[in-house]
Length: 52
Image (cartoon, rainbow, N blue to C red; front, side, top):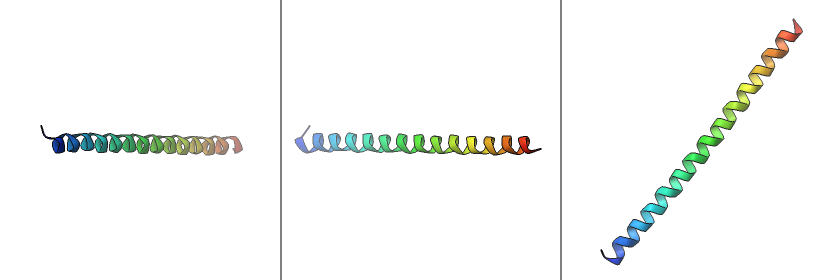
């Protein structure tokens, strides 16, 4: 393999790795948001039951 081909392979691996890391980070952020929203909904429901 030529030096240029090796450089392109290394750059491709780095770009794919960064893309995967960003995707995982976005997924975790979304999961935290969903859990927070679910807890808020539960607390609102409990407070509504307590007021009855």
